[in-house]
Image 1 (cartoon, helix red, strand yellow):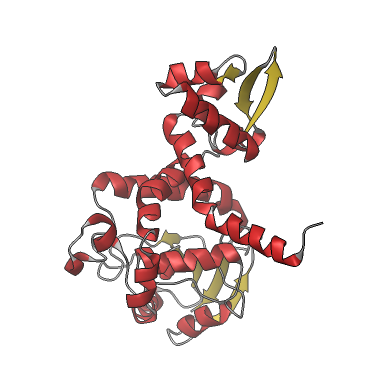
Image 2 (cartoon, rainbow, N blue to C red):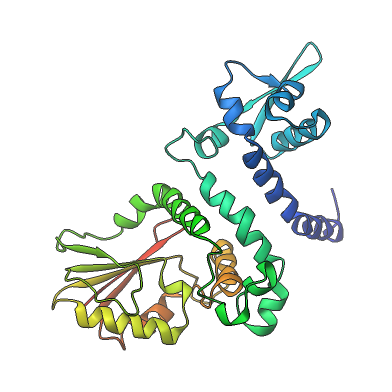
Length: 298
């Protein structure tokens, strides 16, 4: 059995190499490994996969074997030759034909978020997003340039749809929404555009992008538009009361520093935003998934 010191070093090594794991996943998706294996009538060897995808056989073999270690692929040996096929995980989430496909989000993470996170230390130093450093965006366009192109904006929208296909039903089941027949999913330029009449306004993954001041301004606008007895449903990933978990939400919060001007928040912090805006009967529900729900009434 290893000593506590050795265990600590192993944990440190695991953390230090974490970016390599994500890059294996990103590369396999970009190269089309999972789609190819899904379409193949039988398991394929590394040489066959490399030939069909136009890669080196040596590099592909290493990539495939690493995917096996990560449980993204499974392998069996026949006559001394390794043959690869998808696992249930990759078949469900990494094959384009799957209704639960998450590849759009992975591509956005690989091409945009990953590059911004290379400047995390600087984001912590100066408290602003890192688009200028990562992509050469002028500093006076910090937030308006969050999407480098229309294509990237659409990529992100598709990525959110991927995530919602998994998380949406848990969030919408958190509360009984039957008292709200007319629902408005708030999007677009919600700081300026008139808000349509509705019984319930949904702010899904919106408030975490913004400072408290900007959130308060938006919530006040929603409150003015909301009918008496109407409500607001805030969908976000909730931090624990002390802000020290869950780890995924903490990472999301750091990502808000790196890519936007906001943060993830605790239930108490959302209450502190909603109540001064005029909302009452504020209820927070954990869903057990990535995103949680907060319902409040006018």
